[in-house]
Image (cartoon, rainbow, N blue to C red; front, side, top):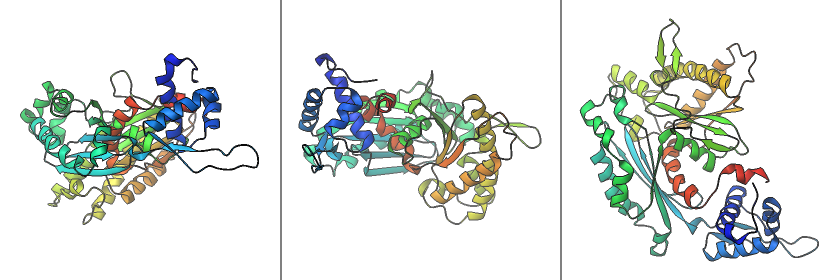
Length: 390
């Protein structure tokens, strides 16, 4: 996809230029003209408009051997801000990020299970606290609130150990509408694992990956699909929803992936041994005091993930698999290593084994993914357009 020199498509061209600068970190006018097919004059007009809106900033001129020096353009971190809300089965997070996805403030709340009134109160009181340190001149640059939440929360009450009656409140509750009514921001909503996948795609440090299956290990396990450099959400937004995937046990019985590859299982193991599982949710970056049990849990998680990966790769020829989660980085590395070992033990004839990589966003992935929803809606375009001629 390329730009158009017709004035009626100026808004699209602005997004195209902004998306290219966002992706590449800094571009000169000649680079943008070459990548988009837009004339130098059109590029100059767009760049002046984006600079006037303080969405981009000019860098220091780079002088070559001949001709005029090139002036790289980059994203202004303070050009826009976004709020993300993660609703989890054990905790909720609010995060404020700048235009480049850098966290400016975060709030966290743990609970035994989520209810609609609890989440609404958390957002209502948390938003003012979250925005209190933002300079007054930047408040009107907060572009929206994105929500990342498991779909159909009421269907998983038993697995999460929550009272069915309380969780059933979610069935007829429109969270997006309720939050839109209490805040003066556009509100967006996405499946939590899909949002985490979006965070890896937009803010992650794996560059140049165009096709991969993303696996996020939280209270349950879920994921997302990236094809041709773009997030593929599927017909109902559940593409990559790995939790219900059937897994064959060594004794021949069948369970779901979420029964073997989720933090919920580790929580249950801790309770059975009389240990307090609250550090799993209160300090997700630092699990201490149950390292041996965590290793035992990884021994259950890895073969289940390996089975899911081989199944998924048989359907879509994924080049990479990315594994992340609401867990410490060292635990994630152990899971990745153990899963690689289990995958290569399968009969992979007819398949090209994918490269299994650790995620780079971590515990904030779902909240950051939520914040990316208004970012995409208001400023960027599909990554296929960005990468097609770059």
